Amino acid sequence: MYTYDQYIDGRDRPGAAWTYCLDAGAFLTDPRETFGRKRRLERAGGHGPGDDLSGITGRMALSGPDDIADALRAAHAARREWARTDLDTRMELGPRLHAALKARHDELLSLLISEGHPRRLAEWEIAGMLTGSSKETVSFYRSQLEQHFDSTGRSLSLLRKPDGVVCLNPPQNAAASNSFLGTAALGAGNTLVVKAPRTAPLGVAFIYRELVAPVLDELGAPPGTVNLVSGATRPMLRQWLASPYTDDIMFFGDSATGLEFGTECVTHGKKPVLELSGNDVLVVWNDADLEGAVEALTECFYGSGQICMVPKCAVVHPDVADALLEELTARCGALRPGYPDDPNVLLSPVLKTGAFHEALADAERHGCTVLCGGRRVDVMGEPSPTGAFVEPTVVRVDGLRDARRIRAVREETFFPLLPVVVPDERDDTRELLDSVIDFVNDNEYGLRNSLWSGDEKVITAFVRQVTNAGLLKVNDSHIGFVPYLGTHGGTGRTGGPYGELNYPILRTSHLQGVSVRTDGSRPAPA
Image 1 (cartoon, rainbow, N blue to C red):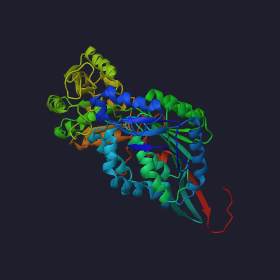
Image 2: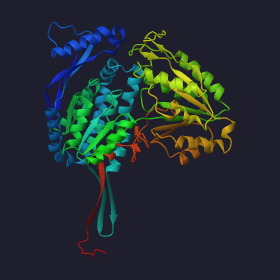
Image 3: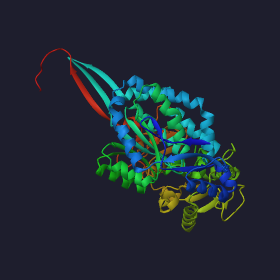
């Protein structure tokens, strides 16, 4: 069983209490008994030699206000020494973490599965971490942090300087992989306080205690460069906001909460780095590779759609809509729930089943056609009013012009419901391509967008004219990772007023210009 204390100022520290973490497979088999065992252990303040630990994966120490204050002080105390560590040493963090991830890939994979991530989803998450620490990506980071120029009589530099202490609050649905973004903030020269979510702390604790902390020790980083705490979210965020030692806060969450929190950050003099909701659009043109497009659309159902960067809405050219929908619904019929260690399972238990049924009913009231799915099912795929899963559901929406009247098109959905919008004759008042691009740009959210087309003119139009979102993928996996390009970030309700493709190494640093006179002269200010 995994056991993690807090990690503050370079030392493990006992917490105020323990949170015990259930194995997801055991919970699906017998939820009442396994959850009851968890609660008994937590009420007892821990376990003893004779206690039954079946179905328990591990435990994490919980932090009190004094622990959090000490973590912030430790990060503040370490910030100057770590920031003045030479850049080449700090950049070694990336390749060393990459090697450590590869060496312990299977262990981390097993841990994420135990936390409830289907195996294929967990493999995808680790792939993102490996891409984010790859040689190509780290070399790009290095190029952005320091640039030098020669000018007559002067040496000129553009340098990115660390903001200071960065506090990171990853989301519980993909805590480990999102928390890994904090390692880029370390590369910029910041120190870090990481909150492991109380409901799913083990993946985060594994990454920072087993991988990051040892690598920092190898690099000679001072104690307090990274600190790991866990506890309730709201009290900790309030403490971060109030602390004079906090400089930046990386916040993950829904848009309504996150945008309000971003305003609070600014009010308190903190820089917010926001990763909020997504409502990604995937466009399929009439000359597209339909098989590839359908494969990309099924990515909607990774984790039952409870991931911000999966496709949330499709727009399909009317010439190919019927053929695509026939293939898509057939593929959806083959997707089934199951235990997370099954390599063929994509679906996770759905947390917001009530919201799913409300969104589906709203679509039907607006005349949409439900093509497949729509029912709650148990782990074996059998219909059940109390089932933890929801069938992959596809809804056809006819007409582009009024599509955003429908809640599932207008707002982020966090369940396995994919609306497919098919333009009709009402949309022919202008060129269809212009109408679709406007539809993509008018999305209130802006995380990722995708296009499937073989027409270079269509591709060029999208690349030049789509201004929404942090990332645009063309004829590629919607959720796949590529080197050099960031994995997160977006516009609108996804990233806030200053949202863009998110490179945490840049977002948690600031640009400084330096001019050094080298010829010994004393020029006039003009």
